[in-house]
Figure 1 (cartoon, rainbow, N blue to C red):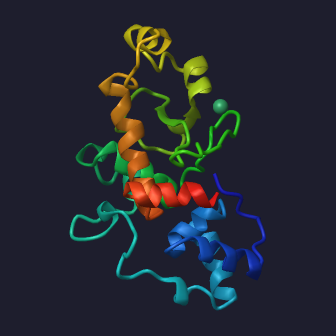
Figure 2: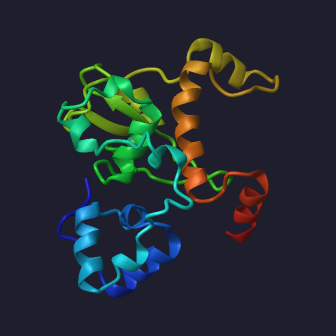
Length: 204
Ligand SMILES: [Zn+2]
């Protein structure tokens, strides 16, 4: 979870706003909760100017008539998680500051330069994927998921990866969770078409 005591300078807020399109995204960029960010942004009179009411550049599923509920409703079980796409819930948990985008065990959070993906999987400790209680969920890197939960790749995936043949990633079951989620992250960054991605890569 975000460090509640972390002091945020005016320069940090300005820098985060320069990299993001909304206050929510700026909070995530700084690895603090939305409430924590809001307190400092308001203090420096930088909050209202960075509001993104129109939702420009924000993934479609986070705006419009089918807007996601506040995650606290799902975390506390007042709204059933089963009626939402798990990839969207995972995104919202990070977006709304309930989970840091890093491995809960080793804090790994490196992004792949190619496409900005972080290799993290959402794990439900009680194996109930509708139980979003904060003490039941954690993000794990592939290594720690493998070591503490179980296999990520099935034997067919491994055979394909380790064979000399060209391979096409993992089985469908694995793919949807990682890819739908990360596609939204790219869209949020405005990197939703190939030219943008190439341009982004050439800048870094
Ligand atoms: Zn780890």
